[in-house]
Image 1 (cartoon, rainbow, N blue to C red):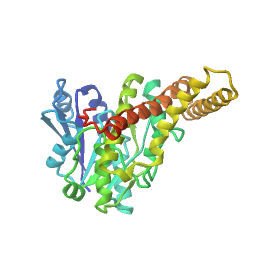
Image 2: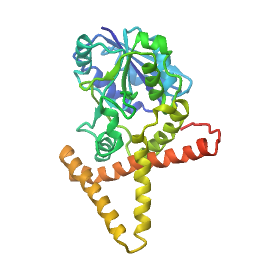
Image 3: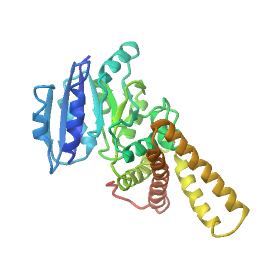
Length: 328
């Protein structure tokens, strides 16, 4: 099996080097790498050139159109039997491709997704963000499960792959920015292809480097869910409303604390229990008091930013019927 690894890149030359270095360590070597520079002002061409003797690698530059269409650009030029796409802020374990190849020999999949976790080299904030996006105590943990909120597994594009046949039938990404991976995986399911999680195909995903960036990203995820709801109404499930419920609960706690009442005490107790669960779960996973404290912040951002984003666009697009140009 020959893999084509496709990496969209936009103004992140510092990240691509670490990703490519991890690909040079792969124990399974039947693959090519296509880096698609999506109109970057700070390109990585010189860095890519430095890997010419270590990888079967190709560099392309195109006008900016977003990561979805950048991946399509790579699909059109790839030679592989199977297309894998990573985000530029990922580090790939040395046996990733070998484990994936072995899995396909036992159970072939038309499309797959893999989980992510924090690398030991990540900063405390990055580890906390990784916790918020993968913990069972937040809705972020759904993405690493065999079945997602809709009862089917929907892989995320930071660690995802499709067969050449899937690309030819689906014609790749129809959306280019936020939600493009969900839209593609929904269409893959609709066409009857076999799609599932490959648990052993994990990557180390840096995500955002600050809580401000993380808030902005998750807020856009909440907005994206409304866009997907308008395209595919049956994909909105109860679990997508949990961040909204949590955000409403925080507002309720604030209001109750303005008054001295038994309800305020009970609400504060429930919130404290949740905070302690996050703290000790993260402490067990990360073995760090600092990361455990930061995980509380990351988890609250993961829920409230999504909740605010969803409510914002639901009110504008569904209730008020406003036509919004979604450039997240």
